[in-house]
Image (tube, rainbow, N blue to C red; front, side, top):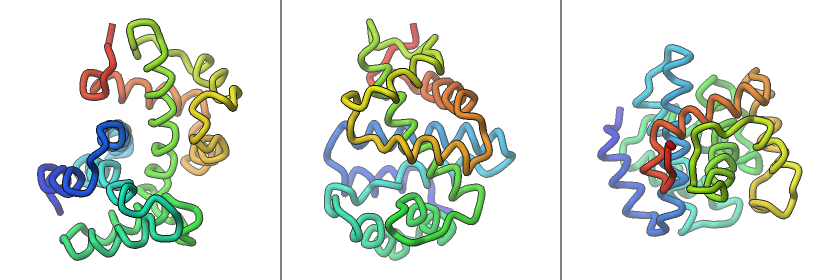
Length: 187
């Protein structure tokens, strides 16, 4: 297993953008929370969330992201199941999602980013009290956070086997726990 500190070092070596680092932290938080819910290893799941887009600045387009990044991670000693999940989070990579880890990473990626974006436009950037209905309403607004793939959000919840509202509420709770790290307020 790779330690969180080592994963953070990889992330910061390849990712200069503060917004991408916050996205990594948000997905990490969501993944750690789901690992606890499913009785899985929160450290392994957190590392998968943290590193899923570490190579995006180097390789922002398919097919290099995440395949080239996967090669780097394997060379750095990141366990194969984590690298596999990272490859599987991008539909265009052609890597099927077979494990719960794979499905959770896919489900948490776009939604964590979207929930973060919704919280950023709330008065005081407060994430506490953000309701699933408010997030769903913003999902319907194609102009808001337009780079978020809405189909991935819906398909992610479905593949994870969680109703969309429950998934949204779960991610909101996970991000609330790390709100200051994301530039958000809890209250």
